[in-house]
Image (cartoon, rainbow, N blue to C red; front, side, top):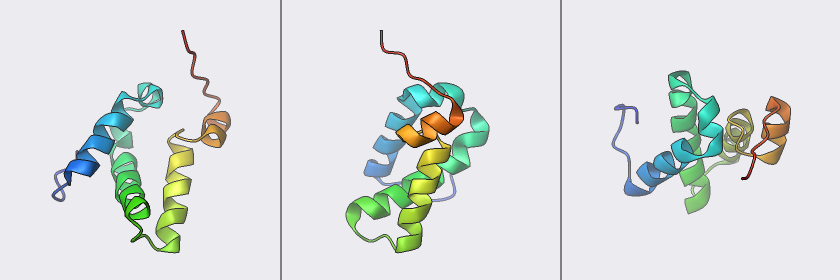
Length: 82
């Protein structure tokens, strides 16, 4: 995780889960800032403190990271279950 701030246990757990996801196979280190920003916005949405723009940014980043069905479709990604 970026060393720019202190991350909560919840944020660290979300970080680990995201980097274990099938989508993370398509990410390289250049995705680190986007994943970190997604986590900041997502935690604010989850705890009810997010502004409307934060919720919108979370949705936008989620799509760009392939974390939503629409985002995966736009990126041409398919997760194969074996």
